[in-house]
Length: 468
Image (cartoon, rainbow, N blue to C red):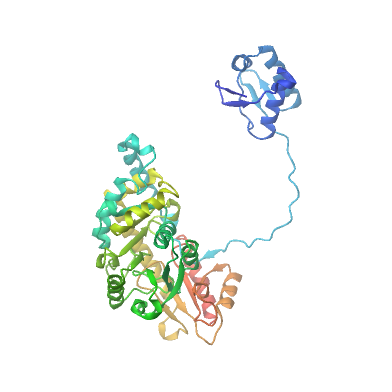
């Protein structure tokens, strides 16, 4: 088994049982057949390969000649010996699989307009970050994350979101789900914990909590947000933590009422409970300044979670937790024993983007873009007096919820009609903790389509909704 070091790295296994020439021929033939040597790869010269493998040059020449004759290699004056390709291998016949084509227009919630990613600003920030990065940045790092990003986030979150924190309280994650999984695991400890989660809410988040061996109970949501006033009742007496989305509840789109914010803050003090605050869509408020984080009201009892998934894009896999002091060490240990530490280059880049205020400039530009999209969506829904449905969540975020009349048609019927016209919408039904005879609705996201496709997507949506 040898590695050549001249020209290309060429891993060859010469089986001594076949002799040097035949062994070399077999090794080269196998490398070409398996695709390890791609077409047009230039091989070392016969002199160089012979010296590297410690065999006669004539042996290498003879092996090359044989493979040229077989069509695996070709030799041209001035070009050396190159791989011509590998024989076509017929794959076994596959049974046809019916796959639904992607929708022509996608108005499902959950994603921003990723075509608006600030590529130029990200590249500039990356160059600056790498120019100033210490050598240690390329080594294994602190499980909490790079100090540059934690410092930048502490300043930004305090100023823009009203979060009370220091860099030491911040742990970088790969997104909200990662943060939720770590917190649920720590809260559960050796004994299963009971965690209240909003109803309706994303079912996958409930699965994440249950995977950490925690019990999930439903916390109803109404037009004032999560019913945090119920946490102090006997029905919730064994609840140790509650997950809420105060800024813009998903999927209803409502903002947690001030009385409900005070109720959950009082509950944490009375029960020594923990609030997991998902700052979902917290940066995008259209009727006034964004609502400050709940964490500022009870910093010793709130684990605040934010991400770049909606502001920049889910592909970055960058999020953060602001933790009460008592959770810093156990959460850090939980992360150390799972992913060890988060990718560094993205952290350094985001830190620079925040410190230079390019991050906030991008958010402000997105806020204006999404507000125009929101306004266009509302206009396509027609005058309020003519609607047979109610629209919720228009003040913030990247989606609205439409409640459907009890007289029908059903969610399923509308989604089918939309799909027939190439349009994908979200449904309310799948978000309830217990399926059944529950209110029905549609969840319409206005972040995903590109600028060119968005008006046509709304026209298609309007045609579908006229069928109500």
